[in-house]
Amino acid sequence: DGGITQSPKYLFRKEGQNVTLSCEQNLNHDAMYWYRQDPGQGLRLIYYSQIVNDFQKGDIAEGYSVSREKKESFPLTVTSAQKNPTAFYLCASRDGQGLDTEAFFGQGTRLTVV
Amino acid sequence: GENVEQHPSTLSVQEGDSAVIKCTYSDSASNYFPWYKQELGKRPQLIIDIRSNVGEKKDQRIAVTLNKTAKHFSLHITETQPEDSAVYFCAASRKAPRGGADGLTFGKGTHLIIQP
Image 1 (spheres, each protein chain N blue to C red):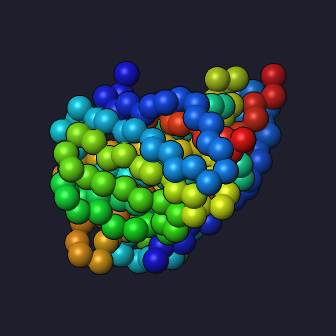
Image 2 (cartoon, rainbow over the protein chains, first blue to last red):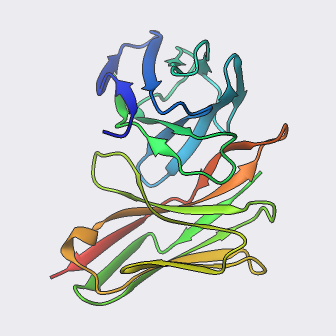
């Protein structure tokens, strides 16, 4: 279903912990993205990567880190520096350089701080 | 950077009537404008998109119009049905500083409610 898989579906984080969200795609897309969704806020861009071994900060990158060692994978780490991490996280991918192509989304990971 | 404004935040229409959602964008270099539908707890899914070299596009009951001069675009749903109830997001694709696209900038969403 969709070719882009996020895991886990639900994740609980204790205060001061780092957690990593997984995103894998088998669509052979060059570009991958991480978005954060809060109620009433729409989707906000955290990080994006247009090619392996390269990534750029989005609008709300503070407290997050990413890596792009393989074309298929773009994991997101939520660090202890992110003070309000409870949210729904969505990973997406696009073909080519992505300027005018459809973005496909994973099913999302709901992160909760306990 | 790009800024996308979306209105209204909530829209309630009678089943069978039409619904219109409007968005404006700020970056004149944006040239791709998709619309996504998101059901509760699920992933956004593309329902229609338009590129800046086209003024209107239609797919069955759904249409999108684009006015590049005014920098606004709209989603039109005709003959609404209960299954159209969802949150709809507009978006614009902007250029990254080093070329290509740095990601879609989304509006804050419209909760569409179809009243039976």
